[in-house]
Each structure stands twice: as C-alpha cells, then as structure tokens.
Figure 1: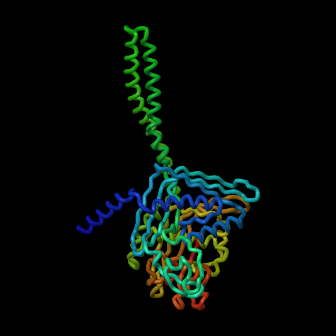
Figure 2: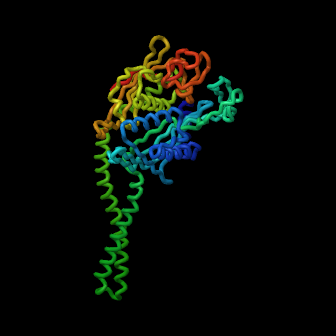
Amino acid sequence: MGGFLQNLSEKMQEIRDLNKPKPQDALRDSFIDELTRFYDDGTEPEHASADMRYYLHQHEKRLADMGVKIQRRYTTSPEDVKATRSKNRPPYTASLSFRECESSTQITNVSSQKILKKHKNNASIFYTNILDRADSQNAEYECPNCGNRATLAIFSNGCPMCGTRFQMKQLFPCVSNFYLLSQLADRKSMDKIIPTIRNIAILFALGVGAYVTVSTWGQASPHYAALLFGLGAALLAGFLGFIIFYLTFSIFFAIFMMGKMTSQAISTTDVQSAALTKGALTKAMQRFDPEFSYDLFEGKVISLFRAIAYSEDRTNMSIYRGDPNLPDLDTIIDIDYRGAMKYLNSSVQNGDNLVLLVRIYLYTTHLIKGKIVTKKEDYNMTLVKKLTAQENYGFSIHAVNCKTCAASFDAMHLLQCPSCGSPYHLEEEDWVVVGLKQ
C-alpha cells in the first residue's frame, strides 16, 4: 500500500510539473525555427544531434536526386499548450518536450517550379526528444590525427599534442528526434466559440430591444417607458438567446465531432491498438535494462527507419543487416510518424542476443512518375542487440570507439575500424535492424 501511494504521489507531482517552464522549452522552440530554416535554405539546425544531421542531409540529398524541394513552416503563438517531461540517468537527462503549432508543407518540382502538393494543419503537436549531458565539456574524446585523449574543453582550443584544430559542433543539449501529430480539433478555434456565440446573442438582444422599443413607443405613456420595455426585452432576449444559441451549437458540434471521431477511430484502429502495447514493450525491455525509456526507444526506431529509407547503399550499413533490395523505400521523399509503435514479440536467441519485433505506423510520401502519392503504410522491424548492451542515452553511430585500438570513427557505413581493421559490431552497444518488411 505504501509503495502504491508513493507511486501515486510521484505521478501527481509529475503532472503538476508538466506546465512549469523548463530549460528544454527554449531549445525546443529554437529547434522548431531551425527546422523551418533548414527546409527553406539548407541551414543546418544548430541543436540537431549528429544522428539527426545525418538523416536531414540524407533527406536533402534524396529530394535533390528526385528533383523536388520540400518547404515546411511551423507557426507558434504564446497561447500554445506546451509541456516537458524529463528522465534522469546520470550523466544524461532525456526529455520529451512538445507544443502546439500550425504546420504547413509544400512540395515543388525544382525544374518547372510547379507546386506538386500543399498541405496545412492548424492543429498539430510538435514533439521533440531532447538529450542533455551536464558534464559534456568534461567528456573524453580522442584526436583522430594523433590518438591523444583529452576532454572536449581542451580539444575546443585544438589538440595539445599535434595542434590539429577541429570544427566543434553542438553536442549537448541536442534534439535527437522529432515528429508531429494531428489534434482532433483546433483548440484555438474552439476558444473563439464562446465569444462568437456571445456576440451573436448581443446582436440578437439589440435587435429585439430596438424592435420592442419602436413597437411600443406610440402606446407607451410617457414615451420613454418604451425604452424600459425595450431594455427588459433586450436583457431577456440576450440571456435566453445565448442559452439557445449555445445549446444549438453544442448539439450540432457534438454531432460533427461524433462523426469526426468515428471516422478517425475507423482510420486509426491500427494505431490505437498499437498504443495499447506500450506498457507491454516497456515491461518486456525493463527485464533486461531497468533504465529502458519507451520515448527514447521510439525516437531511435524512427531515426533508424529514416536512415535506412533514405540511404543510397544499404549493403554495408552497420545499423542494417537485412535485405538491401527495398525498392518501395527508394521512391519515398517524406516520412511522417503516425504516433504509434506496436510491440509484437521479443526473445533471447543464441544465449545473449535480445531480439525484438515491432511494427511502426507511418504516412509516407512517394514521387512516382512525377506524381505525389501519399500512403498509409506500416513496417515490421526486427531489431537485435546484445544483452550486455545497456541503454546509453548519449550513444551516436557517428562517433563510436574501437574496442581494440580506441580509435573514434563514424560507423554508419563501416563494418570495421579504419585504424586497426578490427570488426565493429554495433549490436554490442545499440540496436541493429536485421529485418524490415511491410
């Protein structure tokens, strides 16, 4: 009983803390603006993680190869609902931060400047996974030129051994993943309903009051008594009118929303059933890693899919060991996560391999014979990692260390260390996709 009350108290405190301003809020808002600029002029987002930079540039290259340009706009306002929740695992802090926004997307043929598709959503929620490390300046790195190991703070002034200077990019805090989800109704429009009904009731009251005043002016004695009759009629009409208009609107709105909810429920049955498996996935993974975070894993899976989808060469990717022939992915020019991932099963194979099968639900945009085709697709992903590979919030495939010679290198398309030639096995540190199919 005591444990239940403690957990309940912690959950209530977490809910109370959601709307309190947090440092991650400013980073999230900056990233939203940075992402808009990236799709406008190619400026690299300052707060994007190394893995996300890779995905964005792969996306940029896919668009250039297909001869199209995507422009995105994310518009926010001070009245937006926003919140951040964080999870600490020293030395890292992982946060899921979101806020309402208006989003728009335009796809243009570069050569003809013909607009192929335009889409606007006035009721979106922009989600970001934010990763921070308080002691990032004290983290140890290795000079790729001479092998000298020192802290990032020292390397920021150049390697003290060989003098090599580096272009230092933002490491922490950073945004490791993002996605948008649509709301059922536009909250900002809903907030305008009461004032609109009130104004209609006032106009109705003024009309009734004026009519009663004019109608009784000749019979009233004295004449100004007609003004009192008109005032009383206006007050009564305004009060009753507001109630009648509000109830009438509520009935029609309820019918409209029921229809919309029914339609959405039918179209999102798969996503809703998938969302119910979140707890089962978390429970299954925490048996092997107590610090498993569903939010971080969800972001990792989407990032892996994006990297595989936009890759030109899938034959020697350290993150992917499946069939490289995936023609359905070669026509994709945009990927939108539908907000759900279904846990199918998990098992331990060969003694120390943790194998996990999940299904992700997506909206994919394809360019097929010059035409835009949007599809609702789901993919089964089989992932594997060693049981000894515990959750490392700060792990990046673009900055791994060889366990033989300690050299640092980008392992996205390398299966062995470029310094000593030792095989590199990503599954010893993180998830690897070994199967991907619809």
